[in-house]
Image (cartoon, rainbow, N blue to C red; front, top):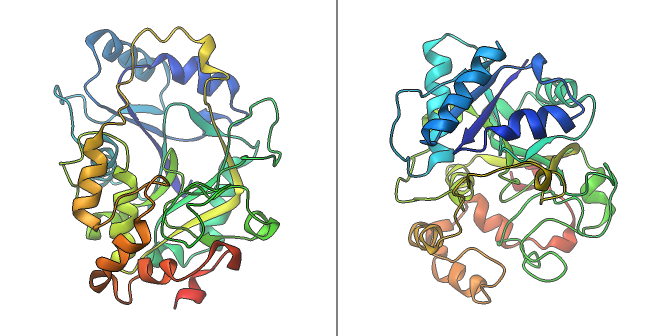
Length: 316
């Protein structure tokens, strides 16, 4: 495979067997799975050890860590890269899943491999890429209102307005039919990370104490340094909003947080507040404009969602 699968979990290890393995149509025994544990309780760490003993393709990559990690998701990218370097595993792409996301098409592994091989330019030009994210399990891979979501962002003119509200959704057909397009931020719940470019270009901001907006900040670091973020909309994942996991006895919260910390850190770093509720975003960005001259963010800011999807050559 051209990729390796990564999870960053805080508790909820029941999800792997009772959610992912049970409901996904792909065979997870075909891929290597690395797990970064964000200081789960002892009972859940024992569950993780049981999973590693039961499945030979699952590895716990940070068993020595016994404290909470700020910016845990992005820290897990670095820890995964360190593990792969240490063990001489030659794959350039880390496929990160939140624990309530899984592939939503039978041949996802093969299609992802083919996509990486076919678009060889991504190794040198692309920091992150993502997929179409569906939230109706029974409905399957079928486009409906609000479904799928194919990215998120604030800078593209019109993307903050209804019906998008900061998400790449409810768009014209060309967005879904194209091979790929440039996006501000892929859906971070399932994203491929370029190991080499991450190692060489990304600084992990430990002021991000929670998950929210941490991958958004990585996306902007990549863009600021001239690397693109893409979506391959014909590759599909399922992100559960409660349809399936409501039937699983998850007695321990995974401590996902929507605290103001992440918004404050993002604004301090980039000069504007993320989110569709920010009606002053375009003026905030303009006030920070000298920072963004000739950057990918500047070019996105001067494009409109009605212009349709853009490829890398449209920026170069």
